[in-house]
Image (cartoon, rainbow, N blue to C red; front, side, top):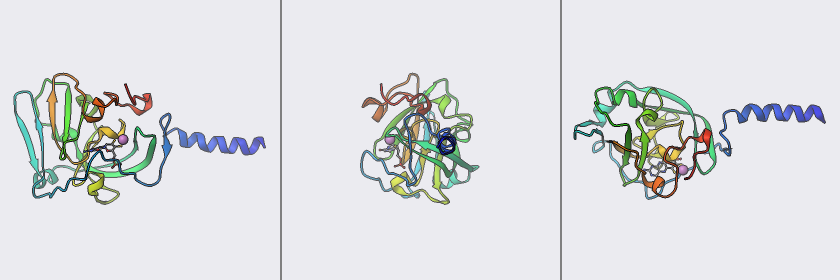
Length: 197
Ligand SMILES: Nc1nc2c(c(=O)[nH]1)N[C@H]1C(S)=C(S)[C@@H](COP(=O)(O)O)O[C@H]1N2
Ligand SMILES: [Mo]
């Protein structure tokens, strides 16, 4: 009896180390969208970063795909309590996109095609922590999961990973985005269970 108990607790302990508190593992890939899936042709797609001086850095699909591509293997955590371990993505690092961007501002509002917004601290986007992802599991990103391209900020709850992202606007102060105005936490660290406020 004690042998079996030890065996089980050992294995579940190993699994739990990658699972933040209050989260449950899933093996499928749930879709969570606040509205309909927008249809975005890569021929029309554009991504931009806008600074406090009104400076706009923008990339069309062709320019975007010519940037250095990262392979990202990471766990993702949704505030509705599911986590998915070891997901694999390809995308462009936010470090690359911010390379020539000059800003004194510390916060960012991410804007999506379709109108979704979410706020982030610039610190949570730089130093290898965030990407604009266009591939999941070796395939172009499904429209329902944010294709052609979405923000991927895996160290924060997944609502921060704006699907169909079209731009980032620098902000002097932290302001709530769509879910944050509806009670979700401004920051959203799954390890601190920053779910609601
Ligand atoms: N544009 C947009 N991005 C979004 C959402 C959304 O409704 N619209 N939902 C967020 C939420 S709450 C989650 S959990 C994840 C879900 O991503 P998935 O549908 O690929 O699992 O996307 C986030 N990004
Ligand atoms: Mo979510």
